[in-house]
Image 1 (cartoon, rainbow, N blue to C red):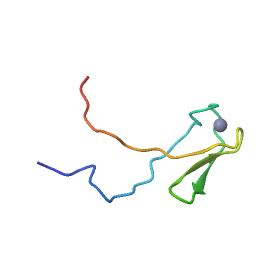
Image 2 (image 1 turned 90 degrees about the vertical axis):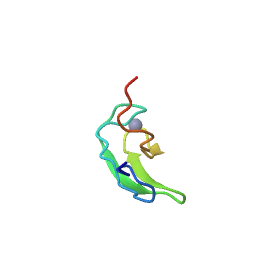
Image 3 (image 1 turned 90 degrees about the horizontal axis):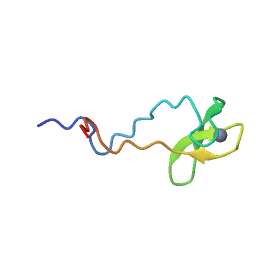
Amino acid sequence: MTEEAGAGRARQLPVFHCPYCGDEELTPYEGESAAGWRCGACLRAFSVRLIATGVQE
Ligand SMILES: [Zn+2]
């Protein structure tokens, strides 16, 4: 058993498009509770969280 997507490893996933408006103008954003990305077009800030790996269905 391997612990690949291990706990405590806060790896920033690259995000190329805003999930809300689809714009590509994303800049790193440091929020109060979590770090994420800020969209320059719709001014939303969001984070990306990995919830599983190798899901088959
Ligand atoms: Zn956006």
